[in-house]
Image 1: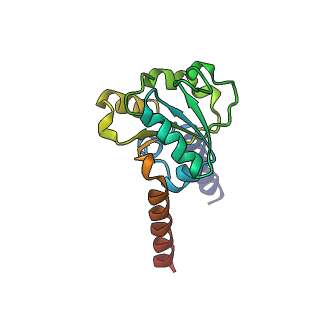
Image 2 (image 1 turned 60 degrees about the horizontal axis):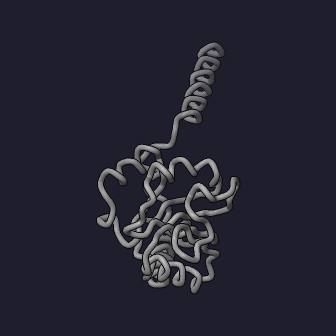
Image 3 (image 1 turned 45 degrees about the vertical axis):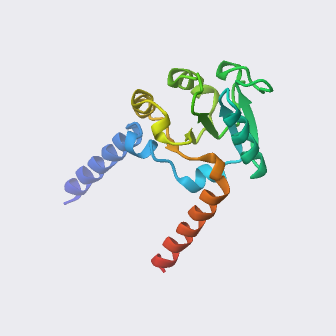
Length: 168
């Protein structure tokens, strides 16, 4: 009986080790928690259009620290200009941005706190190939119309409260 218990413990231990070394699944990483993303304090907005400026303004109105990447009054000229160990938590890619998913993959080591990539204004504004690349690299991402930030955040808080009340 003791030998059987030891064998079961060894099997359980090796199973835990295997689970710990497995990479995150695409399913988990491609669907970050909406409230965590919306609650992130430090954002970088990537884009070259007036829409990019509007997104920066909206996020700043929501008391976020926002860095701009790519347009005239930019903080960083491009993703390669982001310093190592930057505290950015969310990258928001605005439709029409020339930034490629490959550039995002290359800058990931500089962003240890990155929670997600937001696709503004919707998933349909981006190519299927880019979505597949994000998934292939296990980069958490979600589509959001950031011009409706306050409304989306309020709805997400309401849904979270309703779910907690159902559990009680």
